[in-house]
Length: 68
Image (tube, rainbow, N blue to C red; front, side, top):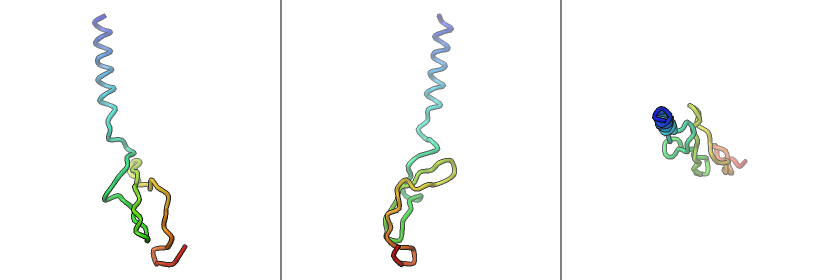
């Protein structure tokens, strides 16, 4: 019974240590934010070493100012 309790305690510790909140995919703010030509600010998600937009594009013009 002592071995079972020891094994259960060890597995519980491993589980909680491996469940870290700093995941590869998380919402970013600030420096990773994307701003379009209209001034809309978009949240981003980091997956691995790539940064993706977490929202659909809402701009109404290109960077040069011409309408879409």
